Image 1 (tube, rainbow, N blue to C red):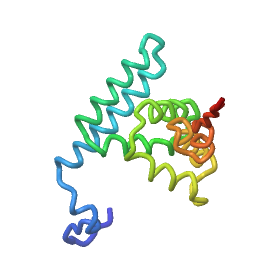
Image 2: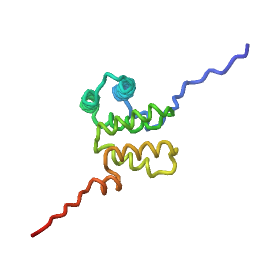
Image 3: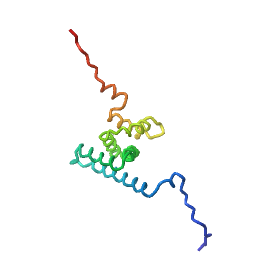
Image 4: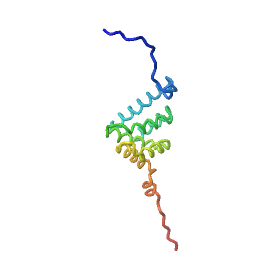
Length: 145
């Protein structure tokens, strides 16, 4: 058996990773678990839209903007059904914090096509695309006599 030299353990963390503390890492894990739980509930036919909206609002109340950000990041999943559920969750949540990252995702050519399409669908569901804004704007015509 070959003997190796004794050397000191040197962590390979970057400055970005060192700024995280245990509480932040635990919170991030809880946010991911909450999003996964909501995805499981999306497949349950007994859960209504109002129940899901209530769950989403509880997630925002508990985790703040991290919750909405994690929903947007979840669009990178490979499973089409999960991505469709995330689009629906983003549409039901209808949070203004998700609009800029979704617009960035939809326009950035570096993302896979399926991710850009999912971001575009979520934006359309929230009614913030140019096409949906034009469609929702009503023109009222009045007849004067």
